[in-house]
Amino acid sequence: MTPEAGDGADAGGGTDAGGTTAPGWWSPSRTWSCGDWSLELRGDELADIRFRRRLLLRGVRAVVRDADWGTVPTRVVDAEPGESQLTVRLAMEGLGLSVHGTLTAAVEGDALEIRWRAVSAQAAETNRVGLVLLHPPALAGGPLTVRHPDGTTTAMRFPIDISPHQPALDISGMDWRFDGGEARLSLSGDVFEMEDQRNWTDASYKTYSRPLALPFPYSLAEGEVLEQTARLEVAPADALGAGTAASQAARHRATPPGNDAAGPVDRIELVAAGAFPSIGVAASTAPDPAPGPAPGPTLAGASGSAPGTAFVLVELDLATPNWRAALERAARSGVPLDVRVVADIRDDLHSVVDALSALPVTRIGIYDRLDSITLPPLRDALRRALSDRGLALPVIGGARSHFTELNRGARLVPGDLDALTFSVTPLFHTLDTEQLVESVPIQRLVAEQAVRMAVGRPVHIGPVTLRPRFNNVATRPAPTPAASDLSEGYGAAFTDADDPRMAAPELAAWTVASAAALAVDGVATLCYFEEWGPRGIRSSDGSPRPVVQVLGWLSELDGASLFSGPSRDGTVWALGGRHEGRTTVIAANIGHRDREVTVSTPAGEVVLRLGSGEATRVALTPQ
Image (cartoon, rainbow, N blue to C red; front, side, top):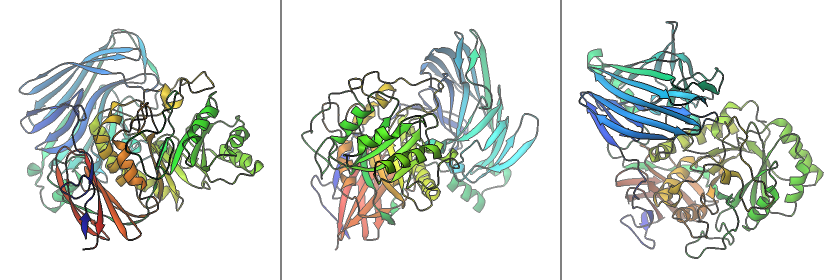
């Protein structure tokens, strides 16, 4: 098969989106090394900590969380790289807290010691202050020995399936094997535990303090001194006599998803994987006025504020005074509605069902306002309300928030829902673009695990948003609109959910990569971003952003036979669809450098050249 050239053909014969790396897309960084050790200083993070070029830790940070688990902004005051020591002075200020401290990395032979010393400038309430250590996801399945404060040990393995709860508790240290030898981590200053951050599509297992079993929030006194140490020691493989087949297998496991520094990956294998998922967009939560139809490129297939998408997903929190206005505005899109109701058992669900009676609703989901998951009493109440009004709609549910809540609440979510749902928010824990990129291969793991949990039922994923639409772990009530109209907006308009990368050309490539990761057999729909506004695929005046083009490409494959496959390194992704004898391949490069890749499909192969941050589409035709 050969690629059929499109308008604006590039070296691969297709149409391009993105391709020019905008300033600020990647986080600035500098390399510090001493002897066999190296790391990247990326903002306030000690990232990609390596011994003899082998990755040991994805990163180490000192963090301060407020009483709602919000991350207090961190400013790097200065950084002093020395011959054997790197010193970074940090100021964490905001959200009612003020903590100033020093993060130090010092090399002592085959050991790297990371020290954190800080002082609270004022009395405050916090949920966490201390070191956070991130272990690469490539350790999955590898052996782990956990050391406890009482001197005992527990032998286990890093989880392969995404663990709903903490895989390790009561930690004072841990030992694990990597392709370059054996690592030994010793922790002091607090008791630590580990959680599987892949639940949030983070590319890490996280070791942190303080234990979640202790009460939170807790008090910091003015002038209180905080000190923690993480000492990482290595017994190199040559000293252990390792280095044969077992070492090579460990090396393969230790290649971190999203890291394309190990050399070119030149082939992606796509296989038949059911039907191509329908593509939707979330209703805008921005304040009125809504823009009219935008000039210029549109998604093909429909008119209205979300042209070309198969549906608009609208969330209706029955506790807010303007949920009816939100529904009415979403309905003006002119496409079917995917309605998600946020309620508790005291709410009158007949009112929302009545409001839907004359609208083109394709399915309806319901979630508990406090727990963010679907509970049996709410499912039953919704089904009764639908039956009372003679409406036959699929009742779906799962988690309104992250996969985390679906995974942890699997025994609570009813097994007879017509489909499972969850959302994706890659920037839940940190705002770095590296986090955004590294989340993509983990999104595939999450999608595959959700499909297994669904046991043959469809899975609806979305909204996929860069930042959280709401804070599902807050300990205080969230702000809500006071007006019954949309003059203030609703939902995400009241949270810190805006992200300037919505307008970046690279987001188009990232969206293709995300869709390629999430589009596995069993996933019925994918919903991205919002119609318009700060969090939208169009700006508040209706002007299309670069991501509109690739969503159009994906939407055109609705109902086609899906060709899907994983990325070998997490940075170059592809997916395809076949409809009426025509095969289309869409690919993206979200890594740092230009790439050439061969994409193999059941209909043939194509060689694509992709610049950093570029997406392309090609059609395959018989030779």
